[in-house]
Image (cartoon, rainbow, N blue to C red):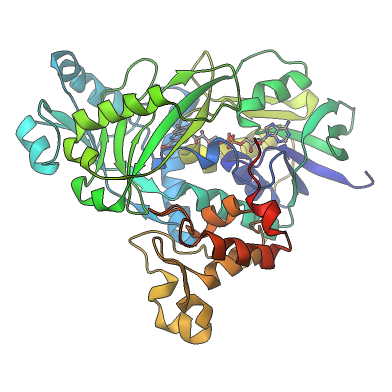
Length: 469
Ligand SMILES: Cc1cc2nc3c(=O)[nH]c(=O)nc-3n(C[C@H](O)[C@H](O)[C@H](O)COP(=O)(O)OP(=O)(O)OC[C@H]3O[C@@H](n4cnc5c(N)ncnc54)[C@H](O)[C@@H]3O)c2cc1C
């Protein structure tokens, strides 16, 4: 309690980590408070992993502006730090008269969003580009700028840079209340108290609750669940681009997309729930996705399913990001970042920094930050450590495969547990290395990955493998 942070950020998802990185690199003393045991454990870990152009956002909205800017920032950042990105492009396909009639309007909307590269193509062209599409595919829109990205490494890279710039990461700590003060606030945490001059709310699904701690009542988050199916890598040859449906008022609809790891995704569903923690997949949800997948890309259903998962969007009634400066309270809300926050994250951070500047906070770029972090190469199109003779010569542990499905090595798992934002459990190891994420889901390598993680983290095998019921 003796030290006062310049800024306390609630939430270490992709948004909180992007803001922490930006502010810490501008000389502020930042503390990030995260309820979970790792960064990126909320919505940021379970999405569709697309770097959106923002072509279909609501023109004039804050989301439109920040997604379009974030797209460029994120692509450049991924390149700089070595995060897997593939500029596959997307094909939005119409399947009936009504959808076909909507296409010109969507191209107009893209233009209104500042995206000029979207163009209508006829049914023959659609099929030439994606020959495995189901019967009934009509004309479509090509959106060349849409890309796929490794979402986990993005949050990790941002957190790593924040920590390098002296941000403190307080994991396993929940903000339970805020005592507002004239010069500084006191955050009441599950494990103590923290003094901070400014508070930034990046609490995702709980951002409305944190907002209420400051006495505001401007929005309510409704968790909108999206279930997804991950198909085996043998399916990857069936699709070159992200296959988008014509969006509805409520959601972007079910898509089929390659992943940077060489799998194919089908999803997400869009189900409004009450429980902000219900990330279960359901029989009905998976059946819906199977039906949709069969219609879009019939041969996909002959391939095996590797995994299923679900994430929760922080949906709000007015369908825009809820970013607000409350200067007199020294509080910024960066909540309700619904279905595009991965793409928007770096632009959201830039925007929050501008809001702080407008309130008189001094932000000077620090000159002593050193080179950017170099993130592990995990993408199928990247050169992985097991393929690099130079690396193996220096450190033979990069030549010892631990997970044969995903070709993750002993060296990578070891380094993930020793990194600046280390993995402390199996989920963290999986996100940082791909180990246990392949077609056998750890059936063959699980025991060895657990043993190595236990040795590196000092945790017992029982602790690491305990399943809470
Ligand atoms: C199915 C699905 C598909 C999506 N697809 C895409 C996509 O393709 N492209 C894209 O750009 N975006 C996509 N998104 C959206 C994107 O994932 C989110 O917008 C983004 O991850 C939101 O990040 P966040 O940091 O705001 O929230 P989160 O990642 O949820 O982080 C908030 C953090 O705050 C913590 N927290 C909450 N309350 C407290 C408290 N009181 N004390 C301490 N910590 C607290 C939580 O534990 C959590 O870790 C998708 C989302 C879903 C669900």
